[in-house]
Image 1 (cartoon, one colour):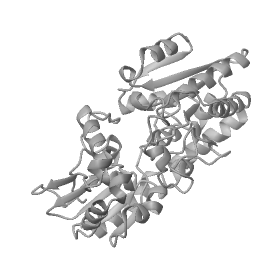
Image 2 (spheres, rainbow, N blue to C red):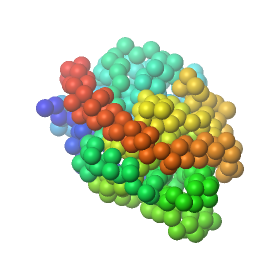
Image 3 (cartoon, one colour):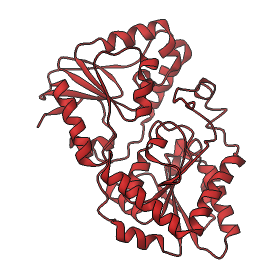
Image 4 (tube, rainbow, N blue to C red):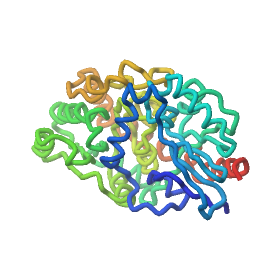
Length: 376
C-alpha cells in the first residue's frame, strides 16, 4: 500500500478512499479562505499571475497528494482537480494574463508533478484549453462515496410506494440562492397547492446563519418544510438520504455536485440542472431529470461563461426568482409524485449506477492503482 500525504487541506470526501482523518465530511470555507479567494479573483491582482503554490517537504510518505493546488515539493506528487480554473483560484483574469499563463506553464513543467486526476470528464476535456499543454499523466477518476448500508433494492421499492413524497435540497448557506434554493421552495409550494390530496414534504439542509432572517422565517412558516443546519456527520447524512425520495439540485454554479452521488448511493431520483458534470451522473429520463439552469456559469461546452463568471452578484447570487426554473422543477416533481412506477424505476437506476459502475469502489481502486504506478 502506497503512503500518500495530502499537502493541502483535503476535502472530506477524500477521507473515504485515502483514510484521511477529517472531523466532518462536509467542509465549509473559513472566512480567511474566502478573503484570500476574493483577492486572488481581483482583476488587478490576477494580471500579475498570482495563485497559491504550497511548499511541502520532509514528510514521511511515498508521494504527496494535493487538492486543486500546485505544490513546491521534494517528492513526486499528484493533483486531484475539481475544475481546471481551481488551480489559479477560479480567476479567468489570471488564466488569460501573460504572467498567469507563464506561471501555470512553469508549474505544469515541474518534474515532480507526475499526474493530474480530474473529478469529471468535463474537467478533463477542458483542461488543456484552460491551463495549457501538460505532458504528464492526465486522467479522470470520480470521487469515491461508500455504499449506503441503510438501503437496498427491496427497501428502495418499498419507500417508493409510501404516500408521502419526501424531497431533499442541500446547499451551503452562502450558495443557497445560486443553487436554486428560492426556486425549489416556490416549486414545492405550488406542488402542495395543486396536489392537495397527496402528501409531500421538503427537507432543506443549509448553513442557517448564512441566509437572511426573512428567508429563514419564510421556510419555518411551512410546517411541511424541515430546516436542518449544515453540520451533519456523514452517517447522519446517509440516514437523511435513505429517508427521502428525490434530491433536487437545480444549481447554476456547481463544478461537480458530490451530493448527487451520495443521493444516488441511497437510490434517490435526481432533478438537477444540465450544468457541467451533472449529466455524467444524471441520465435524463433514466435516473432523474435534467433541466435548464437559471444561469449558465459554464457554457454548453463546459467552458467558463465570462458573462456570468465575472458578474456573479448580478446573476447567480441575484435573488430574483426564475419562473422558467420554478416551472421546470414543479413539473418534474409532479411527474414523480403522480407515478410511483417512474419514481421506482429511476430510484433503482440511480442505485445501480452508483453501486455497480464507474462510481463503485473496485472500479475507482483500479484507476488509482494506475495513478500510483505513474507517480511512485
